[in-house]
Image (cartoon, rainbow, N blue to C red; front, side):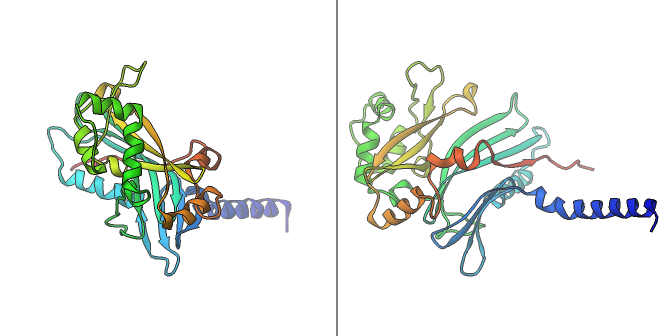
Length: 281
């Protein structure tokens, strides 16, 4: 074989190997593990969970967002068209069958300026499907009375209660409904925040401290000028007894992980989905 043919053969082999490597490089894995009998995968293209027993997908952040975009296209308004829709996800914690995510949404919905909001949301993959995910309330993980005691002792929640002239709440649902229309302004900040209607499921598990779990709740921006901003409320609550093994396994990163380890696991990486309408003929 001549030198020219050898060089050409090497070049063709290199191209073939590069083409084989492209699919693997196209989707980067950020974290993968097993928790609560489910295989959970976080890539730059999706956050998903499959039943370990049969491999059936029971949760997919991409499918959730695809469905939202499809619905937006059905509701299309020619006078005020949606120009761009983007969703970014980070997997904050994995405890047993509960996945907690940070969800950041951008929409150029045809208004004066784009809309941007950020929130936490938790799902129980054992109780939902990929088509209909089950948003789980924090009271499924911790006793409601203990959670209410901790939340109403928090200075920001207490500030909202004082503004609403409320002394106590009997349930987390009542707290959400009672404070939903009350803006919260942290000391030294110009922006105000609020308890949204999804507050019961707007949490992640941060760490374990002396047998109690630290939950972080998200409070979204109250006014549009502060779009995209979010603050957190943190409380310490004893977990339900059935949850303790899952919490300890996640804290040790034997099965899942907690929010305290998010930076070490993922840095600033996230799953990103971007949508633009197809050109209409």
